[in-house]
Length: 385
Image (cartoon, rainbow, N blue to C red):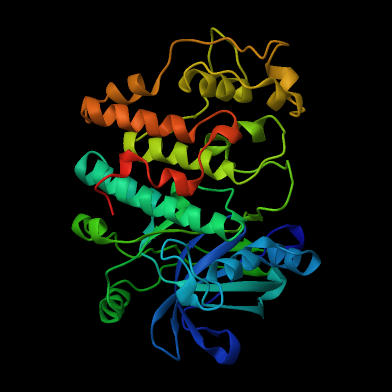
């Protein structure tokens, strides 16, 4: 699929040498998404392993046409030297542009440390192996994410896309252990398929093996993928985040700021600890709500029946669609305590602390949401590092 049609994924071969002076050797495809693919590579100068995120030809072309915030965010987060960066925000080690193959166009490439995987993968694996993601590990991971958010905000960066698969964790594997894993797991390809440039056999994504649970409790979690980031000084109301993690002010079409990250963080707290998505759309036969109505409805119910302020709705172009002149929206009895407590895996005290923390994050009015720095002092994190 060519860059001119909105695609153009990088077509690396195992063993390709890329980057300035051919300083990186591509070894394995780690994964891919809508606008990029990520590859395991060796830094030929240091012999360490790194990850190379190669943007599609289409997305790379947008970089040349207009300023883009991902590389700018990296530079703000890194500071004058990489040591200035928070250990809980992804680091940029290198960047370069290279020509792709055939119709793929050029690729803007970002080089970062090699991580062990993402938190969504870890949650899935540990739930499969242990029945539930360990609550204490969830707290550790979420504390690290919140530190990353606080640091990003202090640098003037709003992430806008906080979700479990944008949180990475380090790997305890040494260089020699990764060498052995690569020897035992050669690159795999998909069956041949026809493309604009002829018959192709693309690589299968092969991630590093999941780290053991004991290592996870000692690991570091990192906020990554700043591809949708934006500057805190920019005033905008464009649509951000996937629906389950989208803040109410975004649904209402209002201008938003860094507090959208606090809302999204609250949603992943529930998702990781409780094990289900908080604001997943489900059709309601009785109320006959569409997706936006359903999610706004649930937001109001879960936050204790609090209504949006008139001042907030007055600057929200879509408010009249969902609220009457008195800022009212039909409610039912629904609470965090009920949703958490019915699973019977936390004590009453823990349920109360978690529910209180969630209500702090998930305030309907962004002006009432605490900052990330303030949330770091919440009692829910007591005893966690």
